[in-house]
Length: 237
Image 1 (cartoon, one colour):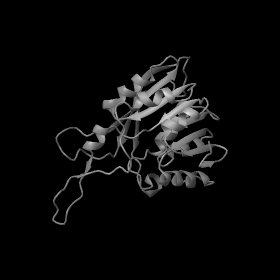
Image 2: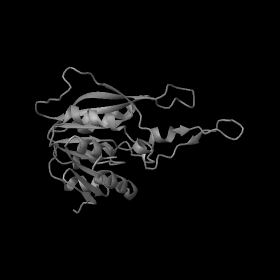
Image 3: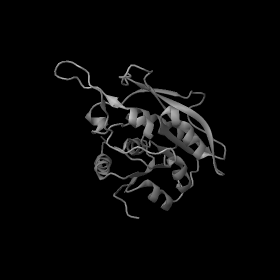
Image 4: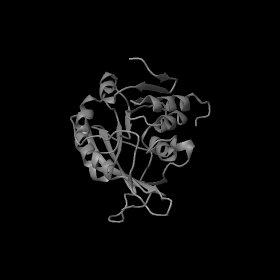
């Protein structure tokens, strides 16, 4: 299996994660930011202002496809051995699907963390509360766990990614500060991290900045090119 890009810290593969992960050897950690579930993407809108100042609600184009409810159960058995932590982002309503999928002979659900999305968009429809948090399903191998957060809590408050230097035209990039925090809390220098949903490569950037190794998978060549360009920089973008 040839890499689309590789350096001392990052190995990037172009292709479907369901096919590629089954070919990988054991990793220390999983940090994953999968696409949204269908019910979340189908309800997502943005509201541009028309010429007369009227608000027109349009379906939001994220630039990637949604995943079905059975996707976590399909992915998890194909993953390589994960020696320590698994962190998976999702909407709060469907976090239980990832927790259930991770309950297997060599892995266990630990806790749900939450990213409080500062400066997030309000609920445009006005008929329900806005979703200003995302869940992070935290699991661990069936061995003694440790992290560097001490007695810290499960809520992380960080602004959403803003500007071209963090978004790269992507619909849902994670902020670099948040990903660096997670990498520093749950992993150690030199560890090997698997990210099956590469996006713009923010997890890879956080890993390389913090001297962790990362295997990253992305099925869209457009984003692979962004990831490769970011990883080539001596001072990462």
